[in-house]
Image (cartoon, rainbow, N blue to C red; front, side, top):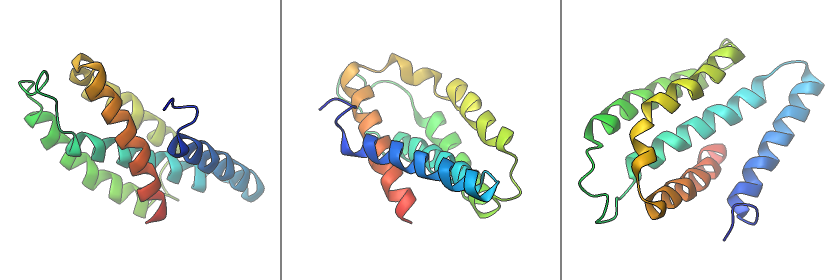
Length: 129
């Protein structure tokens, strides 16, 4: 299934579109920041849940997963205080995450696809909670 037809991808796009429209009507960025923070949580959760294939099983992700646990706690705090959180801080999270997830780019195509699917499924769960 391509991402274009993935119902979880469509859900994410719809949630973001709705959040932006709501924020434009309200004159703030509350909902958009929440969508991005839920996506951030979904990425972190996907890393924690990732089961590597035999080809990638030797890759050391222990340190990464320890950092991700700390970032999950931080993300929950950000969500609780979303109104006070500057939009620029939310954007910076993704830049910081790219560096943190540098080792993930070396995973095989199947593991990367599983990670992507997990992120999209997790977004839906986080948005519902």
